[in-house]
Length: 85
Image 1 (cartoon, rainbow, N blue to C red):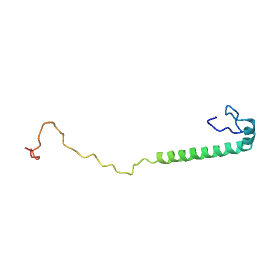
Image 2: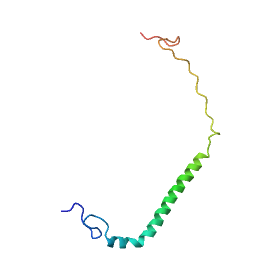
Image 3: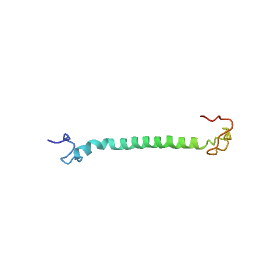
Image 4: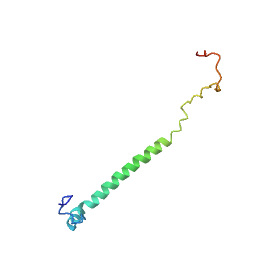
C-alpha cells in the first residue's frame, strides 16, 4: 500500500507527468510575473524602510550625561551607613 496516494499527474516515482506539465503551461507566465511582482514589492518596501531609517541621525535627541557615582572600594564601610550587628 503506498504511503502517498497516487495521482494521475505523477508517475510511480512521483515525478511530474507530461499531462501535469501540459496542464500547468498556461499558468507559467502569469505565475512568474506574479512572483516577480511580489518579490519586487517586498524588496522595494525593505529598501525604502532601510533608507528612511538610515537618514535619521538623532541629533535632535538630547542624551543626558551619565550620573557621577563615587568609586567603590572593597572592604571599606561608608560613614553614613550604620554597620549592622
